[in-house]
Length: 253
Image (tube, rainbow, N blue to C red; front, top):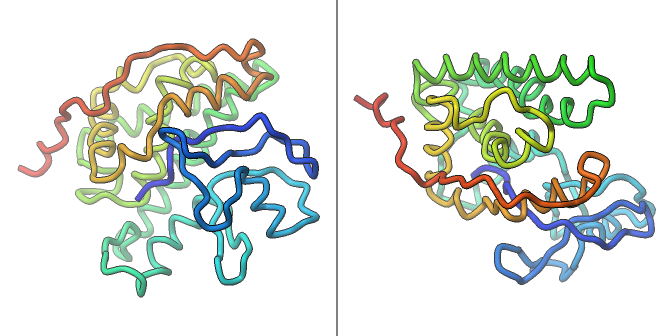
């Protein structure tokens, strides 16, 4: 499964680091902490290390027996969930198959630097030149991915791999957040025929839609990143329909 694409942001600030922390909850679209009963993710970081003063970030993988955070890097967690917990499940889906690992790693490197991280480099840039460099690289790679997806259903071929899920979380946010909030406004994902159909294909995979809460996504970015959006106003649009039919099944023929 892909990482969760939405969560709520808290206004509470952890006294240890003064940063706004992620919040657990019971309201619609939120997830309670059924393991530790915490209300803020910052509490979990402090349980792992009472002297912790760093940034509170998601995802965080918690070890119930050792009662500590064992990892908070999504690229590593997706690999761990893919292979390290096989004895706890009968699911044998492999998103990092040996035959495709070299290609997956190559695609991941391209996508992370220019797309996953590229939108942040553009959005957080404080100099025109830095913004322009990130902006051009972002759309150069999106154009490249559009051409790749004209030839095959998924990034590494006919099957979904971790490369697709790592791209998904950026694509699903793009038109609602990165296009305007981070000034990545050359084209929207909906303007790319292959990328937009591919995004809907991934969204419609079993269990994925439930991980996406666009209201939470927008409230987090527009409401909490006041250095980018000083007013904190959250836009009401755009209207997006990831459940609309897609054409990616044409590669099965």
